[in-house]
Image (cartoon, rainbow, N blue to C red; front, side, top):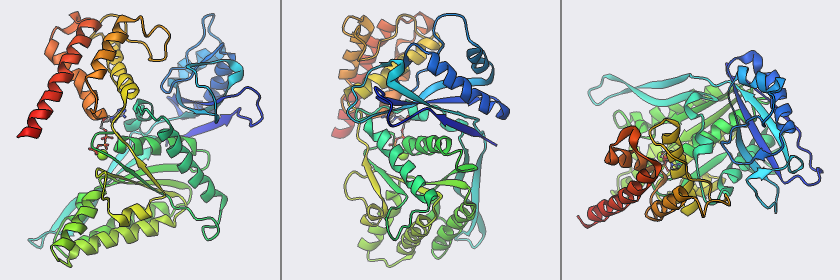
Length: 437
Ligand SMILES: Nc1ncnc2c1ncn2[C@@H]1O[C@H](COP(=O)(O)OP(=O)(O)OP(=O)(O)O)[C@@H](O)[C@H]1O
Ligand SMILES: [Mg+2]
């Protein structure tokens, strides 16, 4: 069973504090959790400064390693900054001095458990047909490790807002705030063009919250509902199928000590089905299945330990029935210049770490040496050629580029970055061609 514990040194009145740095430690064995949290605190408070970027490793300062360092090395796979919460009005900086931050330390063990939840429907030949209706992960899961830090948005308030919203919803639930007095739902809708990170953000959010609330809930799960499976089977079977799927979810949520995230990805596939059924004047099963789904979402809303996460590809015209149910509706657009730079920079760094490229990595945009660093300038040129690309396309671009230079370990970062610009322009051309045909 995955476990985690937490401690915080945050205090509202701390003079000079501009940020809460959330440091996470992934431990190898359950018994190490308590000791690791204490060691993280010790290491952080002994640091001359803190790297305030999500994903930064908590490294020891120069000098002889302390007992805390030795313990962290022995017990942890990774100790890293998961997230930084800036105080309102704070001037952000890459490195924080000891009096500028407080640390929230958490240690957790990841689970590798991932199960398919199946249901049996009657197919058109009247035979029983087994459908994979959902996938279930025990959180925190190995599958979602690093997802939160890997997401880059120009408006980095997107992640903080979602985390703060979902945390507040859970705190209200746990405190027993009466919904009849203060109303809130636990339904999130992320919408935007394809490949902008919506699904990844939902899964990463569930992972973050499972770690954050591990001292409140004994266990956490993420259930991903396969929206297409809801239309499986013969006509009259579909609403029953919805019922079966959500029955399993409700059973899981019966345990008030379990935190349950329900992800309904590409919710528009359900909504679109309703619109087309209505326009075809077809008072069919399709409408009943959508209505059944909406009823089930409403039923889940009353469970204080359930958060429903939905995503949609449609930027306009999302079915109003879904929009109305969501407390928080967040548009996730294509990444801007800074986010694109950071995504491609992380790809170049990965190839250097794996010894597939040699040479100096481009530096951070806010690094004062960025304007003189040749690889950073070359990366800027490549990034300029990627305007309008989604995060998904950007993460594929380095692979295509590497296969185009084809020189293996001989490839320098500079050569690679020049090829990256060429590849980006070629990708843009391909898109224009596709639009014309
Ligand atoms: N802003 C981003 N920063 C970093 N990586 C990103 C970003 N957006 C997308 N990616 C990467 O692109 C891939 C696809 O993302 P994801 O599937 O979450 O997008 P999506 O918005 O759900 O797409 P779709 O609408 O097609 O379902 C993932 O590997 C993700 O990490
Ligand atoms: Mg998606």
